[in-house]
Amino acid sequence: MKFTKILGTAAIMGVLGAPMAHTAHAAPNGDAVMKNYADIAHAGYSDAVSTAKTLEAAVDNLIDNPSEEALKKARAAWIAARPSYQQTEVFRFGNPIVDDWEGKVNAWPLDEGLIDYVDGDLYGSESEENPAYTANVIANPELKIGSDTIDASTINADLLEQLHEIDGVDANVATGYHAIEFLLWGQDLNGTGPGAGNRPWTDYAKGDECTNANCDRRGDYLKAATDLLVSDLTWMSEQWADDGDARKNVMQDNGATGLTAEITGMGSLSYGELGGERTKLGLLLHDPEESHDCFSDNTHNSHFYDALGIQNVYLGKYTRTDGSVVEGPSLSGLVAASNADLDKEIKTKLAASVAAGQAMVDRANNGEHFDQMIAAGNEEGNAAVQKFVDALVDQTKSIEQVVGAIGLEGISFEGSDSLDNPDAIN
Picture 1 (spheres, rainbow, N blue to C red):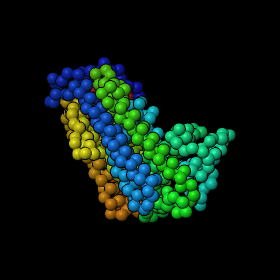
Picture 2 (cartoon, rainbow, N blue to C red):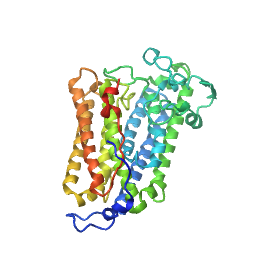
Picture 3 (cartoon, one colour):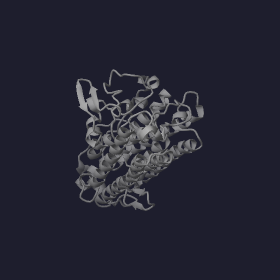
Picture 4 (cartoon, helix red, strand yellow):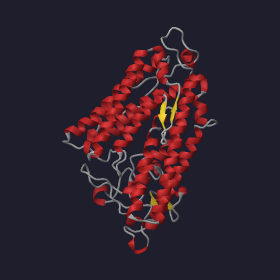
């Protein structure tokens, strides 16, 4: 799924501007389409802030009043925070402000030995690619990473930001949802068998009840990571507000810049990211480590809401966490104005990918999670995952056709070796 250079904006003004008389349906105004696109982004990120604040309160309670029940509530709050954020991932790939920021909040996979204790037999003790593979910030107030010595005596947001992707290693994920996920669940030691991570609540206990040592520093890390997540999400929500830079960017050139971003995000998330790196790769390798929410066994939900987010922006409709709906002029309306059959085809295919994602959710709700679905020998589970991949690839082929249908050329989508060159995967 590769294209070349983007056509100049003048060529698409006829589509984005006034309605086109020769089409069966009047095209919506480009500015209106992009305003609604930005409104959906603002609503989605604002919901992510709200749910992250609920998580923050649950984390504070766990740290202040550690118990099994407090840990369960914090885990439930983390899972509840994921749907709103995952539906915003479609704003990646085409919006530079989002692309430059996203790694702070949802980077994955991670070498969790950077953060805390791990099972050495499963995880190993070193990595040629990552000097910080087992740095264990929580256990060590002073860190030696390569030739650098880092003062980690105080665990706060500044330290976490310093450690995030340290040494230029992407797997050194010190911040964001997945660092928090690891601190709440711990490693999933079950392979492709049933069960998620099972960190004991006593890892946050006070005094003699503390297990695995350093409970106070573990609480400090969890607190800093959660507060930082709220701060980062708040910043991104502000970028999509009425005077935010992300909104201003997509409104340029009568909406042409934003339309390019929207299609790029839809195609890249569909194909290379979700269809390839997050789904097909794990299926090819039958590897539970290639599971996006691997510690919590929540991958099925994250995949479903990614697919739903793609559908949201095409239809120009997003249902908020409070049940209210943000809806307005859409890319679907633009496509229908020039090619009603293509619009119908895309809507059908988007519905199919969402349904395939829902089928994985249903399997998980019945006790078979994503890491079990991709296990070698699980023919039915493998088939369910492959159906999701196939639906994403199929819808990307139709999204590609949108480019020409509304007067654009050469928008580039992210690729993935797992789809483009599976023989290279080992």
